[in-house]
Image (cartoon, rainbow, N blue to C red; front, side, top):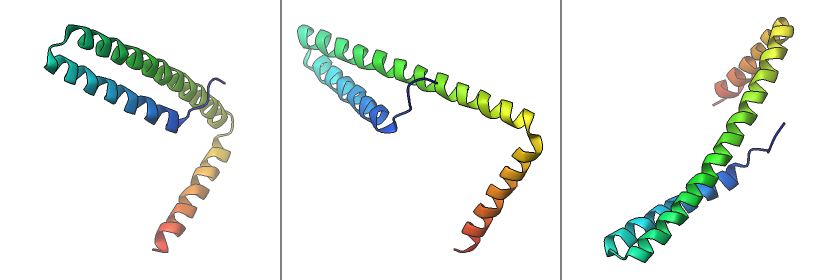
Length: 97
């Protein structure tokens, strides 16, 4: 379908973006023009990469949702039975607590 969703990679990219944003704030506070520009560029690169990953994930999830939608439309009673089975199992597991 497309690139696989990697929550660990996404979390690391978000942490990188936060670090870059913090560096930008520190550089802005210091009023050092060169440091501010470098931090801004790093933050923009991180943000651009993160947006690309989020777009890939969105496309992947939409594709998977379409597959599920087609399956449910083609097999409505099977889908109802699966949903009922999952609900039954969840009820049994939650009832044990």
